[in-house]
Length: 267
Image 1 (spheres, helix red, strand yellow):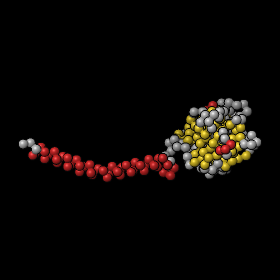
Image 2 (spheres, one colour):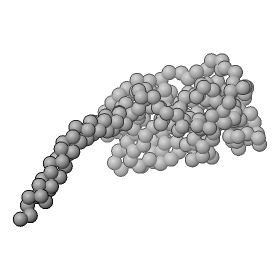
Image 3 (cartoon, one colour):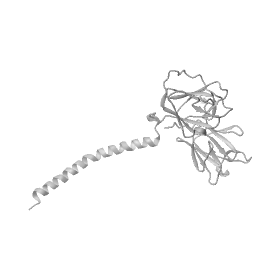
Image 4 (cartoon, one colour):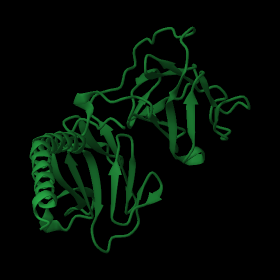
């Protein structure tokens, strides 16, 4: 299960002018204002897009009749669920959904002797590796070099850009002095500690999401629907438990009545 972003720690960056819009819980309309620039608009101004933010995450809805909306280079006609780091293109403008807090850029621990974990994967969601999953049973090299595990065939990209390693259920992104930062949840970083649900982008288009499909979520991490299903199952179990004695009693009475009919009903 992907970790949902905190709804009080998101913002939308308008890359054309560098302005940033905090995205709190609720509905946010994006369209062209009086100056014909893309920005926050009211419902009366006919938004092109709406960002719905709730405890489940962030949902993008496209207004009826609007075309040319893309998320990470892929067209969206009606609705899409977003994650921090996603790039949204609308009528020639680019917006980026970002976490409000800066990702870790502090010294990382030494994991030379730390075993890998097949349950921790990088799933490609854009670029050449879209749809592919890369496990972290060993460190992975990112770069243009032929031996790179995540090879980016761009002459301008460094041969050895970064290394991805497993450490205590997380992913360590280590810069290899390549001179070019990576993007984590929409923000440029060099060294970072990534959690399941984080998105990392190399060379502006090769996107990966950290996932841990083998990890058992903690009870407090379980979605509300799962908790509701669990409670419903418990209620049904208790209800069946209460009905069982009455069913046994009814069966005994019916069996007794049949026995009496067999003994005294034949004359």
